[in-house]
Amino acid sequence: MRYWVASGALAGAWLVFACGSAQNTGPGLSGSAGAPATAGSAGAPAAAGTSSAAPIALQDLCPIFTRDLCTYFMQCGGARYRDAAHCERELTCYGLPELTAAAARGAIDYDPSKVGACHERFAQSPCTFGFFLVTPNIYDVLQFCPGTVTPKAKAGDECSANGECSAGLFCNKGAKYTCPGTCKPFLKQGEDCRDNGRCADGLRCDSQLTQCVPIDAPGSSCTIGCSYSVTCPVDQVCPTNIWCDRAAGKCTNGRLEGEPCGALGSGATASTAECAVHLWCDALGSAMGVCRKTSASGGPCNNELYACKDGQHCVGYDPFGDAAGLGTCQSPGALGSACEAKRDCGEGLTCGEGHCQPPGGAQAACKEDVDCQSGLVCLGNQCTVALYPGDSCSSGVCTYSRCVNGTCDYHAKLGAACAAPTDCATGRCVGGLCYDDSLCKAPM
Image 1 (cartoon, one colour):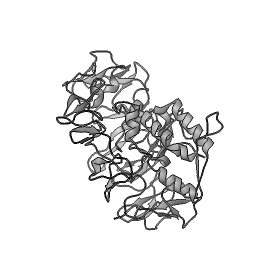
Image 2 (cartoon, rainbow, N blue to C red):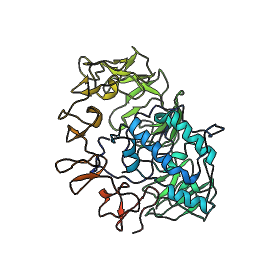
Image 3 (cartoon, one colour):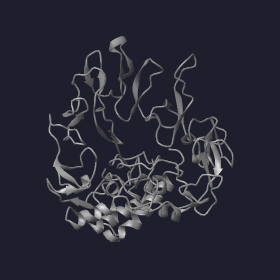
Image 4 (cartoon, helix red, strand yellow):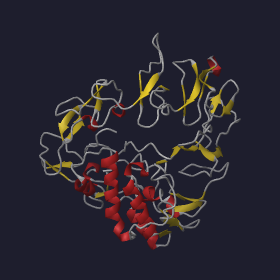
């Protein structure tokens, strides 16, 4: 079943700004996963290049794609399927029928060698290959490996994904997001962007004007906030995350190291001066501070994203009161150490009631599956024995499966008969059949 993914794959080579237990009652979400928003150094978007990896023919892609998805979900996202075989049985090859059809009609060129190299690169570092907010379709994954699929469709040609349309074009599926869509040029400034229209680079769709307008830039007029998009290599500081200086009425670059940040002005002109991407502001409470670079172990910190280096967490930060002060970056804590989240605790430990502790046994309190021992899931804030296909569900909830006549069973596959969305691995039941709407919504 398609579901939200929350994993630790966020520490990557690039950053683009633009969870809980997934039981059979969890959401089957539609829509495509994120663009190559974050990719680790082993998986940063780059040409697939030469490789000794075996080529993967299009007709052989489905089981490999499904196996890789299961590796990502189980190893990087902590999804508690019974085993890999269970996961592979539950998932489907999202978007692959559309990719196959696009290749058959000449809308794309599929390169088996580069797809093989892409798979090899994933296998080397699954958790840093890329980051997906929802279960990705095949186009979402292959876009991390340029050259695997080359778009060939021209303006006016039919399409099912943006990855089929040649440079300068996008796949317009209209307000209902149905297929086939049509490859159209990106919209220019002033053009109507309703019905899922895509504006050209440097433009955004203004929801009130329903037109493409320029993205804000330093010096643009503003009253509340500024719109921007930032792609920033992890080893650089990028001040292009503009913010609105309400006293000046202008968008302003993010502040650099040593420059003032935090609360600025008062009343109608009160603003928050932001630090550049990959810096953090050491302000306490509503006071002013200065922008700092990321701290190593033992350095100062607060709870901002870039305060501590990877693998470190902030201990002792208190922004308010008489004891207000910055914390100290420290390695993940040992058993009994203070914590706010699992990331604050060492290997094999979780954060419970403010302290690092072993995962709980049956009936222990929990917030998510990782708070529970292997073989247990978090249901109703209590660690509960996971029920898998073949187990009785007369008095429990099935895990990554459905309850059929008192026994947990696998979800129905794409195209199989269904009576409700919860019957389907895709989470969508349309016209009595399981449907994949990761690329195309069902016609109404």
